[in-house]
Image (tube, rainbow, N blue to C red):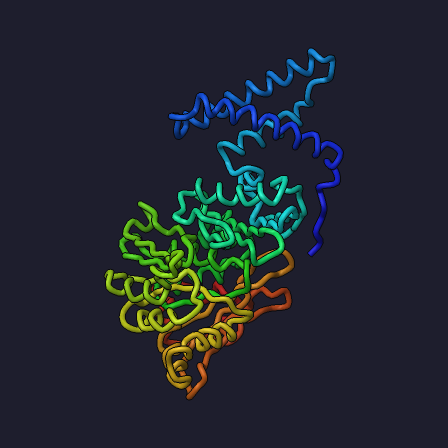
Length: 431
């Protein structure tokens, strides 16, 4: 992937802009301390905008009185946005969070890289003027997100939270030479399977197959590497679940956002709780899955299976909660099954893990990159267990461009179940 550097184009004016931004920040901060003590919510934001405008007007009067040229309109807009975002937004990050094309922001100290929906990646100017300011920005993010996690220092050197727009933030310090921040955004939070067809993640036939798997209450695991769209596809498939069903979602950090008054009104969202400073009070995914089973779910959805919770999830899938969904990191649909067995073997004998996985998981849907596009690359049907092995058929396999093409046929009884939901086999070429 080629990384372009856009910082040089504005390097000549960056220092001057930053200096003026800092001057205006101090001026607005003084005014806020005097006039904004009891102002909250929308009134606070309105006051910030007013004070920034007043500060810019005062600066313009001073410049004109000195016989200098006023700011160019474009520069004035950038400076105004930077000052407003410092007090009412998320500082230098706000412009990227406001950009719907941005899908990922990675900060390594003063090095900032932004990825967009087309897979392109570019380097942009720093979002903070110093390491201390970056740490303060991270703390401000936590405070304004409403997160329970507010502390970020050498004693608690990591921060894991969700922003109000659904973006997922992870930050670390002390364990690296500079503070690092990774922000993953999900521009397709409301995408349906037909929408993903329009984004070329899959074709109409594959979309119809996945919709039929959900409607037929098949237990499905979505696999793929980091940032291949597993959560996006899970959300889209979940939109095929009837509105009357009760869903329990379990996540490391709230990210799925499936609760919807129309589509999923009866949805309980559970999140892992990290240990406190005294290293107590932690609640992990395996325990949350057990809790979920006591909440009368129709389906259990695990944002990412990464450990012993696979045991409870498989038990849920094989004991009446058919149609459950989950995701797992893996490099192929076959490796996804191996990965799940590896997690399960931490608790069970190896022979028992194959029986557990084969008795619970019915399909694996794998995602990969095709050029700069995330695509459904493989669909695998789990058949049964033989000793330590899970036997499966890859019904859709990766083609030359990594996109899924037809391979082995579905089992006839499974095909009948899918047809009963309205699925037409002729929508997939070769069946």
